[in-house]
Amino acid sequence: MKTFNGYLREDGSVGTRNYIAVIPTVFCANEVASQVAEESELCRPVLHNKGCAELKPDLKVVTRTLIGLGLNPNVGAVLLVSLGCEAVSADEVYQGIFKEKKWIEKLVIQQTAGMRNTIKEGRRIVAEMSDALSKQDRSPQPAKKIRLAVKCGSSDATSGIAANPATGKAVDFIIEQGGTAVFGETTEFIGAEHILAKRGRRKEVEGRIMEIVSRMEKRIIQLGVDMRGSQPTPGNIAGGLTTIEEKSLGAISKSGKKPISGVYEYGERIKGRGLSIMDSPGKEDEFLTGVSAAGANVVVFTSGGGAPQGTPLVPVIKVASNPQMVHKMEEHVDVDASTIVTGTKSINDVSQLIIERIFRVASGSKVAAEINHYDKSIGIYTTGPTV
Amino acid sequence: MTSKVTYRFKALLISQKDNVGVALDSIPQGKSALLVSENGTVSKIVVTEDIPLGHKVAKKDILKGKYIFKYGEKIGIATSDIKSGSHVHIHNADSMRVKDKHTDDENL
Image (cartoon, rainbow over all chains, first blue to last red; front, top):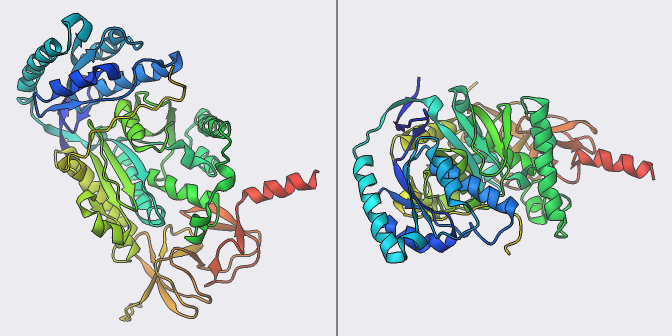
């Protein structure tokens, strides 16, 4: 049975990293969070631009996402930084994290009286957390504790035939080991949603898949854009894609072939095992933040052109498949899937490489985005206006 | 039978269930290509037309009205008879949604 070395948490989940998440509840607290986080290498500031001046439905999403980020298995301790007047309830976020027995402290800038005092106090707290966390050790954990998210970005003609199918087989493997996997990017399902829906474990899942696609499409049509009618694009057609089903399946192939157990809202925590969908945009920072809040502890991100970004709380493994770009963008590539395109390795061969890399990264091996420190972006997906 | 010939041209069979391969090179008419499947097994395919890089070539005959399979799933329908080795694209294949479109037109 495959194992990896991870940090076992109180709730039974396992972290592939051991971070102190410094989370501002509102963008006004970003500067304080950022400076507090300088105190220790274990700190990951989770800077974002939400938390206030939005409507209730969006505030609900932001609250849920911030709680999820604090509860991510890769987080050993949380420092919440609030301004004091923001629309998101810092107490609600605190309680959401505290009740799951995660170590959390909270500072309110307007109460601690200003930036300098809060930073000073924050650094003291974080130093204490850092001291404790650095004494924690990894221990052997079963493969079923892997919580994998998959995404494709900077896609080109090779993504759909190489990186994605190979990644899909790695997802199948994780599910077969009893693990958890999640994918999303709802706009990519347009054209193949009925094929995807058939993979639903229950009728209810089928219905939810159709619902999230329809909902996303309605939002787009309201802006006067016909996504369905314009796919595949002339560029796609020139490149060999014949139908929208083919294009969508090229993206969906990264999810493998297993049945889909659940469909979650953006930033919602995923319960149980198996393969799930999270309603999400393809936008990299928002997707990666969403799956971090959902509880992913490792991500595989396929790319044709080579995309450099990661995310603060979860290691992102880059699988690239365009032979020219794998060479040009090699500092951003973790697994080379271009061998499928050159015919020197099979899809199965590359899926084995991806699986091996997932387990090594889960055990502590750094990904390119971590080595490059190209992993600071957070984005929270909200759909309403700012006010 | 193992061949010691090194194939200049290659195509990819993403799933064993597929009836099309994806050209990994631009394959000129009349040439043989190595068709590599997901698990590494190989077979030979002779193309009867130029197949551009990234485009599909029929692995076997596909009759008009039958499904095109890629990724082990239906990606479209043949809109005319397709012979093994020929180019499969918008001129002889279309989305399955076209069927629904035609039905709507008939009801107008």
